[in-house]
Image (tube, rainbow over all chains, first blue to last red; front, side):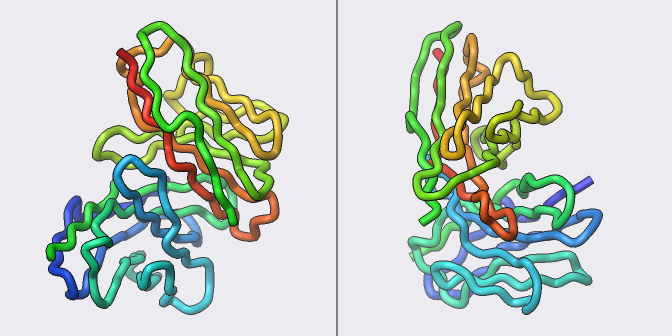
Length: 114
Length: 117
């Protein structure tokens, strides 16, 4: 069975400080990994993805994520948080073969404090 | 590019009525579209996978006679909630996978909030 864990329901960080939103996964195979952001009453916006190659991927709005195969993690990071980064963040995985659907984590609400 | 729209963005209806939600890929063709449901403060739960020209594939526990999905063209999928009840109130989000996508990316619509009175 596939699963995605986001261990923190809520992350608070001061504006200007670095932020990390954690994600670990459990899949039977090699995954594609994604991060999405959701603003209130809106759909999901794509941030970045890991397909293959360099373990550090860079995405929209200054976000990046590092794929760690040994730890089965794909943590989202940003060097300097902005108040406008406050939102709900979802990690998702999809298998490279087989089912095409995404498996989502439970989400982490990020609050950036001015 | 890769814009997905949903209509309506919100709808309020009486119990027992049916509601249709449209999902359109505006600038690409999508052989496959997905329908998700999101409860407050919870993650997205996949309801069904919709393939153009064929029957949708429903996830376990989703009633296909209640949530009717039609994917009649490469740019449009519809979800009809039949005989809606208050427990069907939720945020419904669709996503579309471009036919030409190499990595099966999905692009999400803005969501439709359904409130059943």
